[in-house]
Amino acid sequence: MSAALRLIRRMLTRRITLAAFLLFITTSQCSTRNDSPFALTNQATASCLVKRSIRCLEVRWTTGDRLFVTITKKCLGAQGKSVGSEVSLYDCNDSDLQKWECKNETLLALKGQSLYIEVKPDDSIALSRTVGPNNKLTITGTASGACSRTYRELYTIGGNAFGKVCKFPFMYNDRWFGDCTTYDSSVKRLWCAVETKYEHERWGYCPTNSNEHWAKNIVTGAFYQINTQSVLTWAQAEASCKQQAANLVSIIDPHEQAFVSGGKQKPVIQ
Ligand SMILES: *[C@@H]1O[C@H](CO)[C@@H](O)[C@H](O)[C@H]1NC(C)=O
Ligand SMILES: *[C@@H]1O[C@H](CO)[C@@H](O)[C@H](O)[C@H]1NC(C)=O
Image (cartoon, rainbow, N blue to C red; front, top):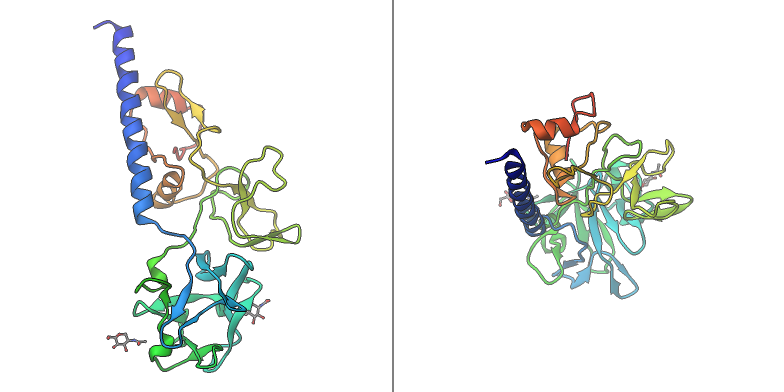
């Protein structure tokens, strides 16, 4: 077989493998990670955990074990760490009073404390140390607790955050953002801050499924994203790749090596 023919064959095989892999990643991502918002209900009182007048509001898990209310851009927080401390909505901060964890599937406890959210008969919400039907919180319309949903944790690309995860919500120009935004981006590309108050101006672009900003190897037709600035473990880098419907690769093929070895540092390639 001539060299040219071999090259064409390689190109074809590569395209097919990549296509198959992208498809695989996309499907597995959808079925295993559900980071969508949800409403929580207490059956005993037939009451929603978070509501505005009579409407139930949705929450979702966000960085720092917090429960973030998508509409009001506030976080669920306790007033203190004792029995009877009121639980309500606050501006999001990094305090322990806004960190939650699940216990026995349907209980929500202040993280590291044996204090559980309880919906009182008068609909007020407070922390309790004893557990009964008023502590059980399930995702509306299901029998599952809040921890059947996962965190929205997005690894940034580029920017100046070394690949850190987006901090949701973050405050920028006196405005709260609960998701990636193109606000103030001259190139209209989605970005996020990696700190709540944007005091150190640390930010990065958000993962998407587009390969618009990727480098294309014209020989093989494959797309690469080379993140020499990212400080991530293999598992974190892999999560970052999956968020972009891509695959983390180790370079063993000499052609791939030649393509990416423009970088001198050991690169994390996605
Ligand atoms: C953080 O939020 C809690 C409520 O969960 C509040 O009590 C506390 O004062 C806030 N801390 C700061 C520094 O704003
Ligand atoms: C969780 O379930 C276990 C086993 O049923 C029980 O012993 C424990 O007390 C429960 N914890 C809470 C906080 O209800």
